[in-house]
Length: 93
Image (cartoon, rainbow, N blue to C red):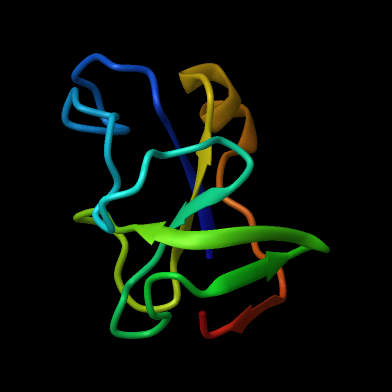
């Protein structure tokens, strides 16, 4: 399952109000960063979804098992993405 979150820096459902660092310690970047369950997909792995390459750099409280959260710039973009399903491939980084 694919979901989305945003990097808008105020407390709301997407983050805790600090979007300056990922769980992996990197700077989150829309179009590159995705959140994964590191027990399933290790941090630093390349994650390919619908032909687009992301890097597994983050994790969230709701990101468990086969769920991937894709980072978007704005909350509206994350809402527009909604919940989707796709074939996912990853390469351990």
